[in-house]
Structures are given as C-alpha cells and as structure tokens.
Image 1 (tube, rainbow over the protein chains, first blue to last red):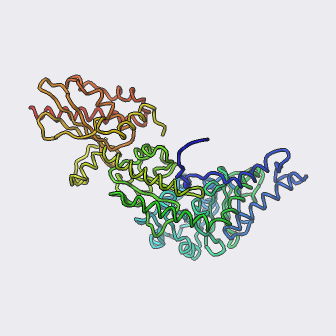
Image 2: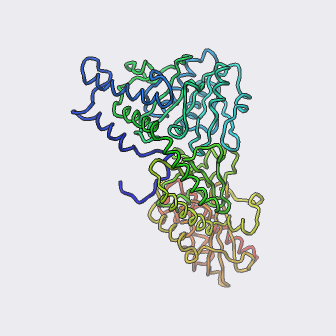
Length: 405
Length: 132
C-alpha cells in the first residue's frame, strides 16, 4: 500500500518489523518449516516444535518468566478472555466477586459483562483524574468473596500506568488472583514477572512489531494458577488452549519480543525525545488539554483534547495523518470516549480527544509536519466553531441552555 | 468512518476558505436577522445558522458556524446553498431528508441533517418573533 499518510497510530497496531516477517516466511512453504508442531512421528513436526519452543523462550526471556508459563493464544483479546473467564470459573467455589475498572479495554469489560450474566458480581472501579487505579481505591472494594482482580498495566487511550507492583503485593497477601492486561506494555516498560506478584498477564504480538492474530497468556506456576479452558480439542498448550499451533505466527511473536529486548532502550529514548518535541510544538495551542498525567505515562502515547473542536472533524481535517479518537475499537460509534468520561472529563472534552501514538519507525520530520498541521487545522476548525466564538466573547458554556437532540 | 466524496468536498472547501463559504456571523440584534442555534456540546455538535431577510420575506444572506463532525459541517454548507434566495415559506419546506440525500449521509450521520433542518426552523422563528 503506497500512501502519503503519516502513521501516528502505533497504539492501535504496528507494522511487522521486516526481520520478523523474514522469520515468519521461513515457516510457510514446502521447503520451509511448515510442519505441525504436534506431529511426533517425523522430522517436520520436530523441527516445527523446535522453533515454537524457541519462540516461547524468547517471550519468557523478555518478561523474566519460565517458558512453561507461556500459553499461546490468538491475541490479547483471547488471553483476556481465557484469564478472566477461565479463572472465574475455576475458582468459583471460593467466591463470585470480580473487580476491574471502568477504563479497561473492551476485551476485559465484555468478558466481565458476560460473567455478570452468568451470575458473577463485578465491581467496576473509577480511575483517578489521571487515569490511574490506585491501591487505596481498590482496597475499598475488596470483599470476602473476591476471587479475581483484572486491571490493565498501561491504558491504551491515555498511556497512564498502573502500579501493578504494589497492587500485586496486596492481591497476593489476600490470596486473590491478579490478572493484568499488558497489551500496551511490551517495549514501553520493563516487566519482570520473577518480581511482580501477578498471576496472569495478557500479551499481544501486533503492538510490538509482530503479526496480528497472535498473543500469549502468562500463567504463573508458583504459586500455581489454574484455569478452566475455553477451547477444547486436542489438549494443546497443556490443556489451556487447544488447536494446532500457528508456527509462523508464534515465530513472529518470538522474534518481535526478542527484538524488543535488544532494542527497547534505543527505541524508547528516540520516542521519548520525539514525544517531548511534539509536546513542545503543540502545547502552545490555546485551550489544549493533555489527558493523563505527563509524569505517569508512557512516552509513545499523547492524548489531547482541543476545546471547542470536535474530534471527528479534527481527524478528518488531519487528512494525511493517521490518528484516532479514543481507541480504534470504539471509534466506529458516535459515543464520546468512555475512558475520558470515566476520568470525569466533561462530554464536550471527551468528544474532542485525539490520540497520537508514535513508534519505532516515526521520524522527527513526521512529528514536525504533524505538529504544524495540527496547529493549522485546530485554528481552522475554531474559525468554524460557534463555541469558540462564545468562548472569545466570554460566554460561560456551562450556563447556556442547550437544545440536545 | 468512510465519508462520501460530497461530504469530504464540502468539508474541505469550508475549512480552507471559510469566508467564501458562508462561515461567519451576522448581527444577532438586527431586526432583519434571525438566529437559530441547535445541538449541544455534550452531544458533539452545535450548529448556529443566521439568516438575513428583506422586506419581501426573502432570504438575502446566510451565515453559519458549526461545531461537529465533517458531516455536520457539510450539512450546514448544503443547507445554506439551499436557503439563499428562498422566501421564508420556501425555506420552511426544506427537509432533512433532502440534505441527507444530496450528501449521501449514512444512517449513523442522519442527525446532522436533522440538526440543519432544526436550525432553519429556529432561525425563522427567531426572525418572525422580532417582526411580531
């Protein structure tokens, strides 16, 4: 696909790194490593199994886990489903209460809703104004029958970071299973599962230059965490997830994680500099609001609202820049971002949020160009905005009697 | 969200050359001007239409400003093209469906054309209340 558009939506997905694609290619054709990793009776199977297990080590190595704790899945959504439904169903005799937050990804919220329909009770925590779930807020809602807590590590819209270290210590002490959706974490922050008291952790390949349709769930061995499987049919992945392993996808994820391990420091340094440069360029725009706290967020995500400018029109005006309003999973609907609403932002600002996310292939020229375009089109759209007129006239928009439709 | 070519064209024309595309305001206190503002910031769109009417009840000028998505801005522009030179009675008969059809709005964007029709009605009512 040839396009002149600049890609600033790395938090939605990333392109596959060419080095990853090369490894994946090697596992497809007749003269390649195409065998079924479960075939025990010939060399084709053995060779496929070998690369699958190598990839498992690569993934485990990055997060400091035992490779036997890695279960392959089709992506973070499946990992979240397996973790939440699997743990809730396995431990249902201990209790039926689950805690999560209002700003989780739909891949966590929807399984929780499903469990509610099946008789579980779910508490959805409010984040603080920076998009963080604090241990204090969590403690208030833990009950005798709480069996599972599921919280994201890094929020996909804001880039805000939860202190899973502290929360994990608490859940371990209370003997509550702790699941963390870490889809946005790989390559952005260090994860050391030998130190974290996290029981289950979801990962995705395509957020860190691996292929789509590939993920993993970390399932702790000590103390042992058990799950009820969702997919049956052959008992692959120690019974957690049946189905023939997709060798090329798995190899892609392994290579992507191994490249992250090698290049994370360099990538992050560059992205941090670009992000600071970008903010320097745009922060002078009048009535700009940074969503999330600069001191506690990953550098690759910059989420801003421009007051009196509607987000969808801004995205349309930024026609050669690929950004998103809120998350890609919800931007097909006209609802304002549920994440920003949960932060207590007024609907108007929630309608105006834009997420710029940078990655490995972002250049300074691109950042410069996008910053300039943003400045220009925000000015143009305000020229069209009756709300901007009213703001300049000193009208208090809160006091206007609107005619909602 | 894929927009029709017509919506994109109208939106871009308006954005790049607002003064030539009826963006602006008329004096709301003038007796010959009617103002209609509809929508709410919380819903993601606010449309303000102003019409200037002569002694023969003919619309001689229109200006608008719209906070909203590309379809809302394009609907405003489309509405103004339909309004200019019309009498108030003719203007009252403009329907949201006509605007939606001309712009090929998808179902999820039909409220943009509804907003346009509502703003016409409100602007006319405002003008008529000044004359009453």
